[in-house]
Length: 123
Image 1: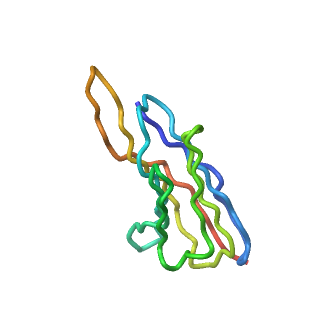
Image 2: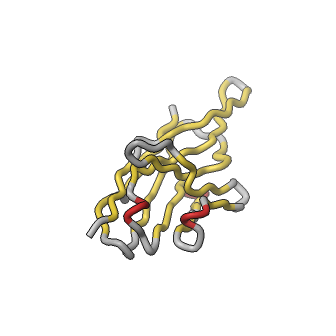
Image 3: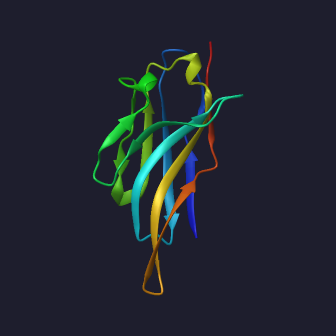
């Protein structure tokens, strides 16, 4: 079993900062790409930021220069550091990871999702 557990959401004023964490646990052979998505009410889920196992990153245009996605491979954890938050950043944020498991001499790669954490930016 593989589990992604998120933490760090909450209410913050415009211009403030939050840091989200996502820790992967379970029967993990290797974690490949990790990323953060968000879904606002009435909108589709969108990719916010992603990072490969080698550390290459990409960001959705509206968060470039404000968000970063550091990753701690030793802890199987990815973070989303969010600065200069705006009301339009309000959404449920989901962690996603592509994880390879090993079983019976074979390797299986699947995508996994966290449970989501609410981020609300409001004065």
